[in-house]
Image 1: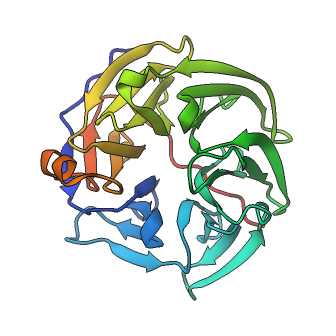
Image 2 (image 1 turned 120 degrees about the vertical axis):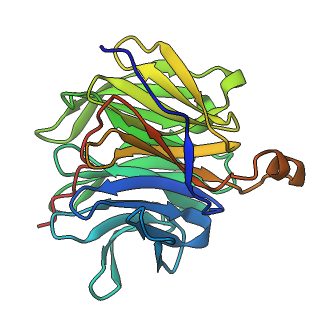
Length: 297
């Protein structure tokens, strides 16, 4: 693995997101997309225009992915569905956590083989009522992880045989063997234990060299880990108290985009970290993956 070279994080949009999350880089349109969960809004931004384009949803939107039909698959408060940009229609695929009215969907991503995986969380952040669900290409949905409090970051190793996943309050990154032929998970194991001094692990991405990039809520930094051994390689200071998630983008997929949040911050914390809620960019010598797409049939 070559050594990592990075630039200092640059604020590229003072978005003041309440809860910015789930960035996705659209390589076809060269747009950065992300959500402000608590403002029920998905944003599209070409990173050149002064302001992004907002798309309002009727409820919290926790995560999303692009589809092969240029639509958007999204996890919202009540379930998972498909959003059609051409007409603004949102249709549910499933409402799997209907028995838990205080749950909502949180982080999620398209898988390397064209499925969609997303997890739920208790909005009070204390009951392990959440689960992680996998949506197959035929839009059937199945539960793959139980007893989750805050389902968060998801990433893959370079050959897509392992998935890394975070349940934030546990400060633990788990690793699963993944079978792309049938979308099955096996052999779950604790892989990384994030020290309390660093904050809580939130969103996550990976590069082609096998490094994991984990945003640390409350830790004002982005951490970089070895996906083979699980060791901490370095931390990158972010000028926001609560970095939330990250993705690679740009023409050469070497630009790391980081979202952040302002929710719950005290006046003193906002004074110390006034850029919280902003979107940041770090230029690296690493390369990420194109964001995978859900195969919509």
